[in-house]
Image 1: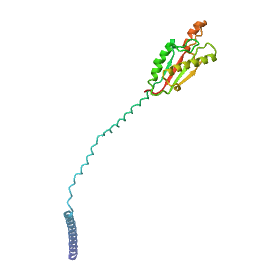
Image 2: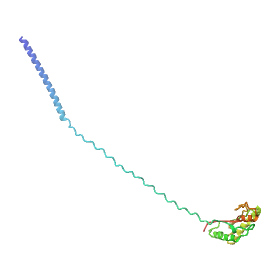
Image 3: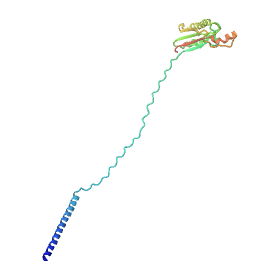
Image 4: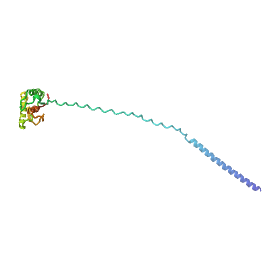
Length: 213
């Protein structure tokens, strides 16, 4: 009986020693963990303060667009070259200047017209290129007759101009006959009236060509 009690006491004591031993080991483990944490906290670097991000660079100032300068104005046009001055002219016998019917003699009015508008004009020429004289007739008579008459009328004008000092080799004469009428008079039947009506056809035309002085 006493032996059973001793055995139970020893067992209880053994359990108590075992639990204390386990408790001590647990305390040591906990203490080691705490010491490890303290050591880790002691050696860990202090957290650095976070710096604010650098501000974004300001955008470059926008340069105002400058319009390109206007192109230079074109050079002025060259001054037009003046055309050479000429002494060209055309003189046609009119009214009292025309030839009498079927004749080739110059009237006083025709001579005065030649002096005023042909001789005077030729004096303004630096050089005479040409003087062309056309003789004309009315439609009365045959073509052959009027052709010869128109030639005599042109020659009469040439003779007068040569007599005034114009070089004959500068003068050309043309007999036009009745091929270029200036007036027709179709409704007149009386011969005397018809001759008077057709008077403008009995003319001479003098054309002058040449540069002016």
